[in-house]
Image (cartoon, rainbow, N blue to C red; front, side, top):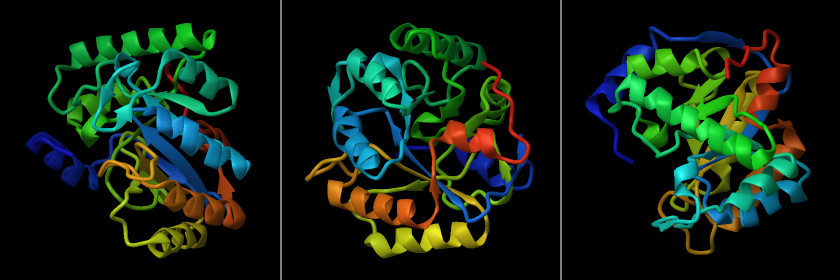
Length: 252
């Protein structure tokens, strides 16, 4: 995935100057499974895997991608949003037009987010997304500041575990993809989150036997979800935030 120079600078300095520091402590650790862009397979296959293990995920949705097709395969249609919401998954914001927030004027970005919120509200019977993920992982200081006032959390693509104090304007996340080093590395990360009473977020895109380079196979996802569900708490992003010692208020 591409990332602008401002993205690299913002993330590097953001380790020392977090926009929205928040304590994270979850006894025994907690895991969230998230899907970016919302390919149809993320719900049809990925959602079925989560539900088989009795857990739910977070779908970062850019509504303008509905009923299109790209390198991730067929994307969600409007009915998929309603179905995911009805089945207890979280629908979250990924901008409307899948914008690189590190390259977009703040006024344009916020207007685009408003458009996405309105689209999701109309498809879910009034539900408004309270969490956000940066498309491409693209961030800037201005985007972080503006969006952290709008959402309970913003998730990036910087790897690691959210523990102790985390920046809720750029939460760490770990990509699950077909070229990963097997299930062992993911189990190790889950064990580290448990030991730290921390929060580990996984993200991926399409789920298929021959996935894109941004997605993973059903077997990979199933192995990770099974281990997480047997080891610790697994919740969508919104439910983790609601269960933290000092919940962050939603600004939508």
